[in-house]
Image 1 (tube, helix red, strand yellow):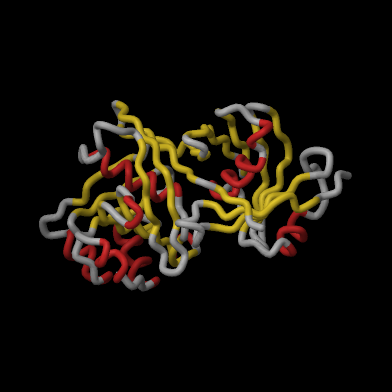
Image 2 (cartoon, helix red, strand yellow):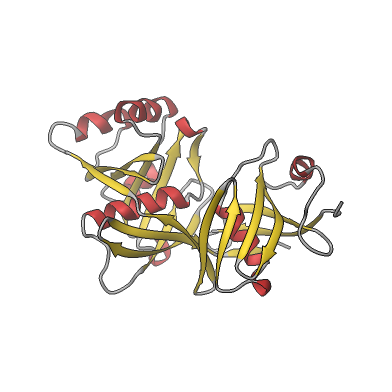
Length: 276
C-alpha cells in the first residue's frame, strides 16, 4: 500500500491573499495515492477540503475529495489545487475525474478553469411577481432569473455593491423562496466590484446544506449564463473577473465564456497559491 503524505496546502480563489478556500493536497511518495484511510487523513489535515490524487497522466487526473467529516464527491476548488500542484506533469488541457464526473480543464493565463457547461436560463417576469418573490428577503431586485446547470438557482440582480454587501440572508426565507420557485440556490449579484471586477455576487444554498458559499463556480456560471441570455456579456473579450463577497471570506474567480446557439458555454476557475 502506498504511504500517504501531505504534499502541499493551497489557498484557492483567494482575493488578494485573503478568503477563498484552503485545500490540502495528498500524494504518495513515489506517485499517486492508491490506498489507506483517506477519511482519517482528511480529518487530520486541518483544512476544510482534502484532495487525494489517485492517478495522473499528461491529459488526465483522477481525484477523490473529502471534508473532515465525509467524502464530498466533486469540488472545483479541490480540483484547481490538485491541477496547480501537478502542473509540471500536465498538458495545458486535461480531464479531471472525481465524484463520478468528468470535467474538462484548461490552463488560461496561468489559472486552471473547469468547464461548467451551458446554463439553462429563463427570466422570471417582473410584473406582479418580482416584488412578491423578493419581499421575504428584503431585496429590491433589478431583475430575476432562474438558471440551471443540473441544479436550478434563482438569480437576482440588485442595483449596487452596497446593496449586495448589506444583504442579511435568512435561511428560512431563502429556503421558502427556493421551494416556491422550484430552485435550490439563490444568487444575488451586481455589475462591477472591487479590484476592477466585472461583477460581484453572493451565493446561498440552505436547501443544499449551507447558508452561504465562499467560492462557487457552479453558481457563478449560472449568473454568467443569465447575463448571456440577456445579451449583456461584452463583445470585446471572452474573460471576466468576478468577486464573490461572502463576509469575511472574499474570493476572486475567472470566467471564460463563448456564445453558442443554445446559450453561453461557461468555464470557471482561478488561482491557487501555496500556503507556507
